[in-house]
Image 1 (cartoon, rainbow, N blue to C red):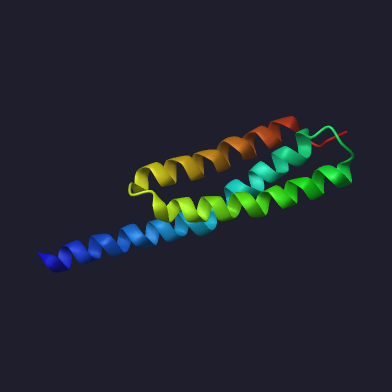
Image 2 (tube, rainbow, N blue to C red):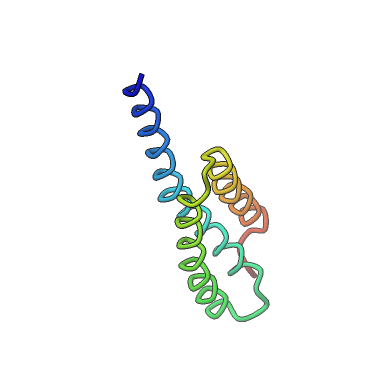
Amino acid sequence: MARAQGVGQRWSMAGRCLTALVGGYAAAAALATLAARSLPVARVEATVWGMILSFLLYAMFGLWAFHEPRLVRVAGLIWGTAIAAGGTALLLGIRP
């Protein structure tokens, strides 16, 4: 019985790591793209501010992914943010 719990915990930790690393990166990149697209400054400045924001967001997503006890909430919020922000950035298109 203890072995079955250990296997489940390993899969849970693997899912948490995957969500924190890959999903956190995707969410941070999508939000940085959306911020760079929507900031009312020059393109170069908006890109730099978006990149600065992405480092902060990636760290926050990674830390929160291991702080929150429920994996479903972590995966839903991180992957949902990545999909929503990426889709919004795609719908907005290239900045004129």
